[in-house]
Every structure is written in structure tokens, then in C-alpha cells.
Length: 448
Image 1 (cartoon, rainbow, N blue to C red):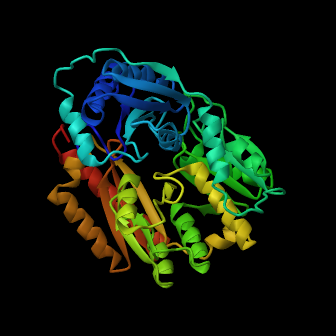
Image 2: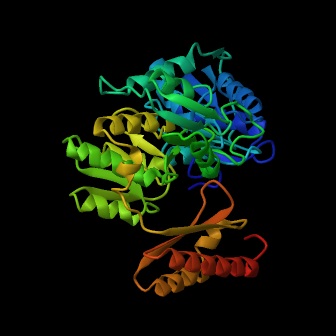
């Protein structure tokens, strides 16, 4: 990890850390390292208020470096991955802070295959930032893309492979978190026949992710109960993840999504090879359920980029994270919330049952998690004292679970995850560990 790029691009408070000047510099550095002889970049953004400002700066940076710019406007992050290939562009850029609060924003880049840049490419871009800029012989063009959202929606509906899928009679609550999926996701599911109850589908940059979306499932859960709906879908602000709520109020997270897909394909002889990719945060219940059926579960470090790279290396068709980032390798090289919802509804149709029933086949172990704010999470996570606290917590579990403490790659936080066979044991261990970390932060120097 570099000092500027985190696990999902450059992210921070807009107009303070992430300024127009930095956006211009990032665009020029990316152009110099990735398309030094010119080319074409597709830029998309979510609904944040700072989005147009950063879009203008990023576009100006690329154009001044001789790279033609296609502006997709407000559109889900995975749509840029699709549009890069559809437009035969050389590069993609997304202005979004995903599930972060409205005051934050971010910039992440995609290569010509539609995949997020590798870490060494981000290092090269950051290394080029201080260097002198030599303007291109001519300023390149900046144009709006035609029908970008319509083409992406057509791709999503085309991902249905069963000829007779019809969602007529299904009532689905959809929470778009005031983000980028609002103009697209409801139309896609209505095209497939579903009755859609819309929540927070306006593109409102001041309210994106606030008390709604995939980080606040209580909103969609209440609406599912109120409308007696069959399913609830909750996207994050940029639409690369989705979590589900069943008619009975059960949360269906990314681990269970992966399990549902893997088991369905396994039963039909479609899981080739018999490998799924998850992260160190994925629930042991998923691993246990799949390994008992002869499926190898490969774990990576946190981040859908790491998952994607491992999927390529192992030839895996399905992988993802508990947060709802799920990659269907036969359809897209990156996580896509709407695509995930579409494919799950297709599977439920083929299985002739509901997703809650399918999710029950992936029993998850109890977990507890907590975030501990700190100024320098990476430095703190590497301290011997923190390792000692983790070892003490693991000893307290008596071999009945595991503990993970890691630095957030997107926010100034230490993230705690405790997994065990008892919810009360998880909760107690997590709370004690958080208290210990807070004391260690208090003893640390002001820089930490």
C-alpha cells in the first residue's frame, strides 16, 4: 500500500485532502504512466456534491496530457468497467467514495480490461506526481458519452442466461442510497417483470449513504416488512456492492451470496474449477459449507482487487467479500451490485425457491465487529502492543474462534472482527479488545 492510494484508490475529504489540484495531478500522472502516447479515458462519478468539481479537474488533467475524455456522468462504478470495453477505451476513472459519508470523495482507475489497477501501477502513478508536467502538443477532446446508462442497463438484462426468467409477481424493495444506482437499478428489475418499491433513488449528493443503503439495512428491512415484499436490495453509493434482506427480515450478505451461487452451479456441473475466492474476513461458515462439498475456498487480503487477481490466477468464476462485493468472472471483471442482484434472482427462479431458503444452506458463525478511530492505523496495527492484545483476545476464545485487527484502507480506523461459536463470546471479546486498543492509542504519540 502506498501513502496516497488505499485499498480502493485515493479517498478522503473532498476539497481538503482530495482537491481539484490533486485530481489534475493524478490524471496527468496516470496518463504519463499508463497511456504516454495518448489514448482515451472514460470518467464516471457518483452523486456527491463534489463530483462535478473533481470531474472537471480530472478531465482537464487528462485532456492537457493528450488523452481524449468520455464523460459518463452519474453512473455506477462497475458501469465504467463495462464502458471501457464497450468503447474500446484505454483507461477508466471513477470519482466516488463508495460507502463513505457525503463529505468524502475518491478517485480510482481501471485498466483497458476494465480491472482496477494493480498496486504497483498505483505506486508508479504516485511516484510521478512530483515530476514536471510536459503538456501534450494539443489539448485532447472532452465529450459526453451517448446513452452510457442505457447501454449498461442492456448489458445487465443480457446477463440473464435462462430464457424463461420472469420476475412477475415478485415485490422487491430497492434502496439506492441516493447514489449512482438510482437511475438504473429500478428500470432493470422492472424490465424483468418485478414490482419495485423505490427507496432513496434520487441522486442526492448531500444524503448519499446517510442512514440508508448497504451500510444501514434497517431502512430497507423496515420497508420490506411494511410493503410485505419478497426481497429487499440495498446498494452502496457507487453500486459495486449489494446486500439483501429476505421477506422474513434475514440479512443475506456477500458470503451467503457466494455460497448460494457456488452451490447452485455445483449442482448443475457449472462450477469449474471447484474454487471460490473470498477474503480473510469471510465467515468460516461459508468455508465449512463449501469444503464439505469438495469446493476449495481461497482467502485473500481485504479488497475486491485482491479477490479479482486471485480469481484470475485460479480460474475461479465466483468470488467476493462479505460486504457485498461479488465478482461474476464470466460477466464482469469487478464487483457489480446490480449484476449480483440479477444473477441471484435468476438462480432463485431456476431453483424454484426463495433466496432466504437458499441462504439457510450457508449457516454463518456469529461475529462481532467494531471500528476504533485513530490517526495512523497502519502504524498502530504494526505495534507489538497491538499484537499482544490480539494474542490475549485469541487466547480468551480458547480455540473457539478467531480475531482480526487491521488498518482500514479507506478511512482512519482500526477495524476489529471477532468470530466464535457464541455471539456473547464474540461481543465480549470485541468490546474488551476495542477498549484495549483505545488505551494503546491514548498512550501513543500524537502522530499515531
